[in-house]
Length: 249
Length: 235
Image 1: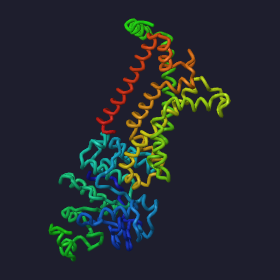
Image 2 (image 1 turned 60 degrees about the horizontal axis):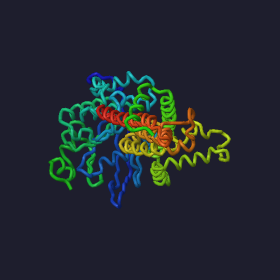
Image 3 (image 1 turned 30 degrees about the vertical axis):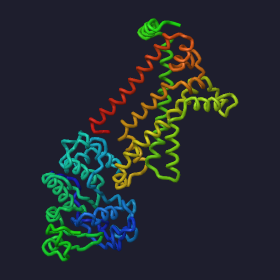
Image 4 (image 1 turned 180 degrees about the vertical axis):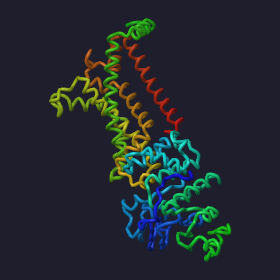
């Protein structure tokens, strides 16, 4: 994995990788699942979305990607509203990736072909090398272990050459070793200039990866700030309770 | 009328000696049913994929109609095709009545709803699984359909084989539009009906045996494909 040449090194996040969310509401069944979210994220680094179950983290990730349409409010990337063009720069990795019923290599090839890449072999090999799956290229993707499947999902996401990578609990239910590999890949990707927004429950993982943190509860952003200050001196009681491992309603 | 033992013996000798008349009937049966199945797969899988991946007003009604057409009696299809192809019918100028082409048309109409309904269900289940991922990639609809058909190919193939089983075993439609003409439109099922009525059980039994063998082969093939696909995690 070390020394892998993919993704390409970026000079720093492009303007199109900065996110602005203004007064975002998402209502379902008469209930506000997201309530007046306001958020501004810079063009580079790793932002961790944290919070208890049902806080609205995964939903927010889907809304900023454009997979779910908000009831009201605006999402802009680099000042541009969500459309197919902006969305094509954003890759999303799901908690349970839907792997195609094909080989590992064919899963990556599918994305490269969809993006119009002509010479796919080299790119695919680089990507599989990056996620440590080069030796599993010819195996059916569905026979991979949970950690390997998630790494393949990462490779597919990187195959779109994204400027933003959204990750929805990519290490949920993985063992520590598999989680560590995923974290290494995320760190590598971020170091190469891809803007990362990561949803996680894992406080330890957030401490290891986050440049800044957005803490959510009950569909609202409770607190946000640089990771160091958030973890050393959380401002809200809910965030303190969450970090201390106390139950948060 | 032969006794049963003698008829079975004669039937086996016809099969073993690859009797010319028998071979001709079997070949025409396979030609008609395989062609009809191929055409049904092209039309049915396309229709199934469209129904599986698109949402429009009245979609539920269309699905209900396609499902209902699976149980359409072959004689009714035969009658409709007969009326269309008869000299006074709208397609009478084509001169297709009592030809293998007419039989292919009838069987295609018979099998298409089966392939379409089964494909729709298979591809819709797959679409539910892939939908969010495909939307996250902003894939064009044609790419979505192509990917679903490719990934569901083993299951779709079993739908096609089920359609072939229906086509090769039906008698009502082909006897009406084909006329059961010797050396021209006589297929296994119509020949069995005719030879039985004539009391020539040997040929009827020989054809019945081959028909059963084909049915068993098709079912075995479906089972094998499913098992292989599951073992390889492609299903």
